[in-house]
Image (cartoon, rainbow, N blue to C red; front, side, top):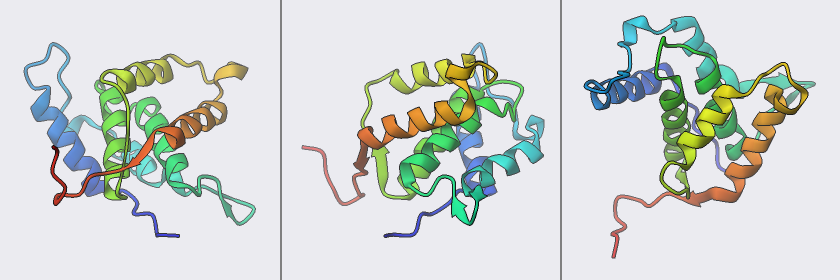
Length: 153
C-alpha cells in the first residue's frame, strides 16, 4: 500500500489563496486568510488522523477525503466560503495522492450544500454516518488523476 500524503497548513493556505483570487469579485467573496480561525484550520489538517483502539478511523484514501470534505464544510474556519473550501481541500488532497473524483459539473457543490445543511443532531445526518456515506460515494467515483505527461485527445 502506498503511503497517503496528508495535507499541511501550507496546503490549506494555498487553497484559500486561490479561492480568494477566484472569488474576489463574487457577491460572496472568500474572506482573507487572516479572518480564518487558525485553530479550526489546524483541526482540519489533523482530522483524518483520528485513532481509536490503536486503529485509524479513516485508513483509506476515500475515507480521508470524505472526512476532509465534511470537516472543511462543517468546521466553519472562515466567516464565508466554507463549502467551496471543503470541496477544494478534498480535491487537492486526492490530487496530491494521484487521484481525482469523476463527477459531473456542480455535483460536488450540491453535495457540499447537503453536508452544510445536515443537522448533526439528527440520527440520519450524524457526522459519522454522513462521512461514511461520503466515503462510500467517493470510493465509487475515485479515478487515477492524469499526470502532466498525459495529453487529452
